[in-house]
Image 1: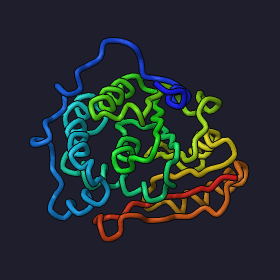
Image 2 (image 1 turned 45 degrees about the vertical axis):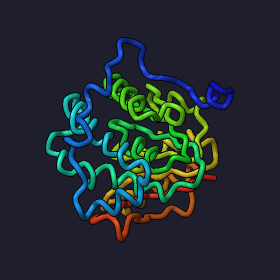
Image 3 (image 1 turned 90 degrees about the vertical axis):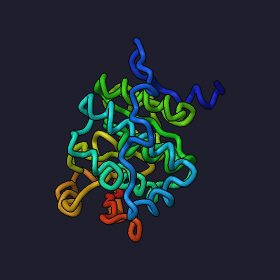
Image 4 (image 1 turned 135 degrees about the vertical axis):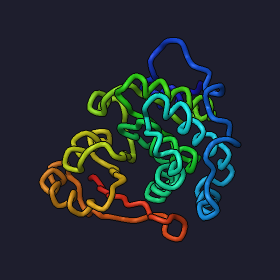
Length: 241
């Protein structure tokens, strides 16, 4: 491992017996496949990694459901509502960025972004042990260890160790609570890219005071995936510094 890679890895998942991820994933041919309408988006966002993305969906549909990371009702919507929704957010991230994904959970958006954007380095920050174990297994099975690190911690616990260019979060908390958790990971410059829904503008309005406190500016609501996704991805972008 190079010095650069050693410097990149601020932490790892819990020690202990590892599960053979290859044995617990739904085989790609058995996992939910993208619909005919979704296929152009899969090709656009994942390109040569489309089969790896299919394998990731297999993990979500099997062990991800079994371990409670997602509900079984999400299986038919794994591609459109989850994986492609997250991949589209990559259009908001500059090339070659070090991205910290806070509250990574089932790897959404972190693993989806790593598959869609091979130029990114990812740190998946997740405090729950069972989720960290699952993330470690999936990252290993997908062969992403050189670009994706999994850290078992709360974001505020590793703010001194991780200096990210971009912080991402999806379904973690309201923006006014999210900013104090995520912005310290940027160390005064960079951007928060928060995947949000229809309440994005309302969340920004309620977070004005905290945005100013953390030196945020030019906050915007942006959509990505038009022409590819049935429901484009909504992102709140908060530049810092």
